[in-house]
Length: 480
Image (tube, rainbow, N blue to C red):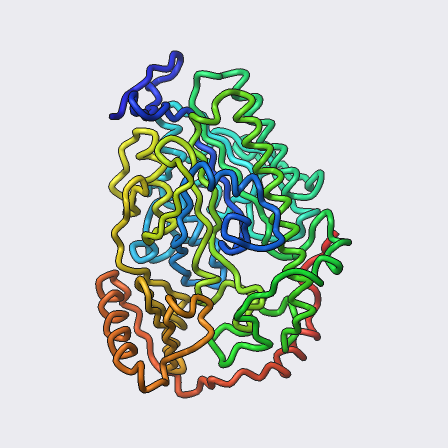
């Protein structure tokens, strides 16, 4: 049952959902986003050695979605469309140009919907969805990064992004720590000054996105000796997938060595643990104010990352490690430590938040409310016009149209996608069936891109030439 609670002093009464028999009302929404976080690098997903007790605690008292997915991207910057989907609740297949969409005002944004209903809305950290959407969605912000990436020590951020000309400053400390402190400062201030007003805190970290640095970086070499490397680690990807020399892939030389990947993973884990420390502070602030049980907390990543898997480093591919994302929801309606394996998308988050607090879901949002099973039979993903993939409960097919290359994986027996069955005669019927299914789903979703074989495209990747070009380029940024 949904109920409206009158809040004195607002033009309209904030909507607060709660079942009087079973659930407390939702008086706060905390949305926490990590950048480039693989879902299998958390303690609650059985990652050995990484310490994430706060995030694990959210999973233990909430619901973890083991099959949550990013839909991919039409550009190399996979995070921009992913974050846009998490803000608008719209499928990638229904929005042809996210850069153009960020200048429009006809798409509903979940923070704006709550702000219009009387909620206080505040954002901290990375914002990759344009100033117009920020101005619509939030009433205030602290340490806001308008942009995509850079050094975690020297980023330019803004404290008053809605007031006149932007006033930028450098980070005061390591990005994760500063963003966490800004977030808890907002919670303490708001809950002390307006304890009866429902609130939204959006906290978006830049970590564990590269450059891979952390306050404990000096310990990375020693840690790297013991970290677990992916079971699908390769020195090189077995063929040219169409995006082999994107910036992400040039972070390490070819061939990838286990020693280099180990250090990268050690730094990655350190960065994740820094995020967890700040998640703990946010949870503690809510608990101290007595509103933890009345707060809907969403923890997610914008996509995964290769990090050595399949010989790749970035997210410009459609393997599970790059398209699957962490997603944990804790609070009223999401309790008990359940692990759900129905297929979820990141653009399900806005309808889920709005449904959870009793606000009608706008018609522009086509995601699903995760309070209920999604009943999807699979997931369609894409990367530019260079890759398409479909997976169902067991099988997965990936198509590389430029070189007319297919891969088939039996995920039930090969979750790390190490054995390609596409050329095995025993699995020919599965390949044919999955090819038909991919075509059907593309048609149903409106994927009308013309994908053709490029006669000039070679499936062979010249890693030596690529590494020579990589070595000749200047560094992408200064780390400190």
